[in-house]
Length: 134
Length: 160
Image (cartoon, chains in turn blue, yellow):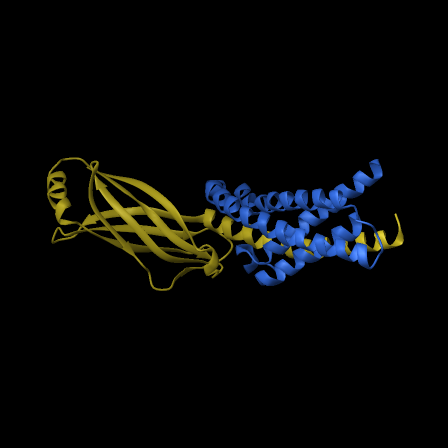
């Protein structure tokens, strides 16, 4: 049980980080990123993360909890990234915070909905291809 | 952990690492831009009423103490004399790009509105003049127009 929970925590952290990272590649920070992605590709990426989580979690209730927590973590990671320059430029903390908070709303929904749809696709794969019962 | 589970988790870890490399590059550039904004300096070095009394020229010195180039796009200013608003204006310098460590001086013309003309004339007659110049300057770092931002400034200049 404890091992299962630890594995879930790792999956949630990784998924949240990937959700955040994919958004970075299409946000204002993407001017400095090595790879730039269109919004469509970010949605596809988030769908894929949802599918992966479903294939790992299998159990529907656990899967839903994992996707929702990962979608909550993603904007927190993103907010941390956006406001981090305030450490070297303290006068801009308010400006960075307001930008980060506004964008975090987008990160949350852009992670949650594709993530959930991906989870549903993964669940269908689990039941039809892998033979798991819902 | 089954083999399939291990592979799936591996895919997730590799994806997180790849995304992490991209995020690290983006975060480093993002921090450099904001450090540039922080290391940009603007100071008011002079205030002068034009000969016809219809304007106030504000001389500002801009300097770049950042490691990256900074482009000055626009400067807005409003001028108060002894607590009375007397003029406002803006300047859009043509291609003012400051390399690292470079400084420049420029003049921002401020027009005195008809409503403010009497306030200016009245306050110029007083023996002590305290000018308060405030506004904001729009700059971009590293020629990244997507991150151009407005930086506020405020200065007081006292003339005996």
